[in-house]
Length: 526
Image (cartoon, rainbow, N blue to C red; front, side):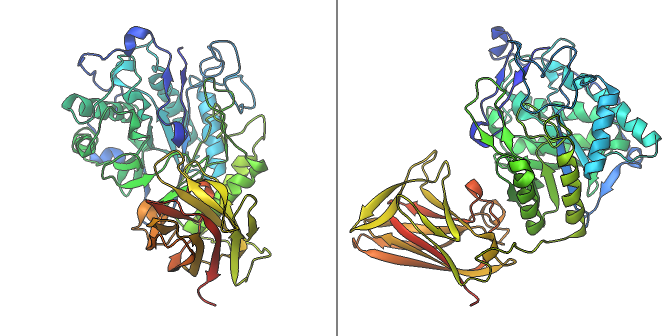
């Protein structure tokens, strides 16, 4: 089988490489789209009597299931040059195959042990790849063994995870026809829906996950579409009920989709936990060292401490849905499935925190030297002097040391985007249950006209990215060429460590890059 290589970090979301013949890379004509390959179409409402239903009061844990491995053919296990394609590894390669019912069954049983409610098979099944021999035909071929494993568990009196769809939208650009889908066109909208229809046509409705009575569709990034607009979602929601018992799908969009959907998340939770609206996306760390052609990126698991911190943040945010990224993406080292490197450690850890999540447990902040302190602070320069407040380096938060009027400081510089930011993380022991009342003070040099703004993680779900980047007032700079202090009083701080680099707040700069000498956070309830 032809192997695909994909980058799933947000910084490299568009770096897909598909090993297909050069001719396939050309724009394809509007070829007829085949009918759905499975038998579960033209369903009636009664067909969903045994589907698993999640109501408004249910807390739900989902995970992405990469079922593309096939050790006998070496697909997604060994690279074309014979090198190991996996960064973390299954306990054994024997039976490690999407064709193997027993392998699927063991993964499902382990998901049950971990407390997973909904499995999201990662589907690459485009209209162009239904025929055997096409690059992503494995995506179709692997579903019947998965369904058989689900049925066997039910026959044994075991309730397996219910099934939703993770639509790997990489296929909007990479597929056997070389078609780059424009979802603003009739043909593009039909293509988009056809992939979704194909998946659900192969999953018996008795295994569907129904969230508020609606099947779950989790969309990967929008960047692979040539173009998109709201019409692709509207078309999906209009057509789906016609073939599937009148049900309108519950669409969870990746934040890059500029459309209205039912929920939103941001990919990259294994690199940095994120929380948008009612959805938390978390993971155990990241390492794609085994994947050729990638820039190095390793987020250390810290022997489980990284994952534990992610879960603690989720427990404090109290989302409705937690998506674990991922169950078994061995290429990128985001797996929580049993692995040669760490056994069942992450299965057991997941179960511990899932139980706490379901019980509504919110852990207290840890005891640190700054527990109960009146303030935390950091003085910036070539070497920061942090006292419970740490400046963080981020891709869009770079800075350089400087000295102004004999005073050490740091000056923000442009990073990967046009934005200029300084990021900060508050000591966990200083924090209290949200909402927190605090005053943030920033000592800056008023070098030129412009503005600086405090953007902080808040409890305001209507603010940017579910409250993660709420703007306080803007401090206007006049160019007085003097040292000044900006003070920002906020009453709804959450400080959940969900901004870039795990920050609690950042200082944004508009039209000027003033040196900053010190930042302080003072309790507002003192």
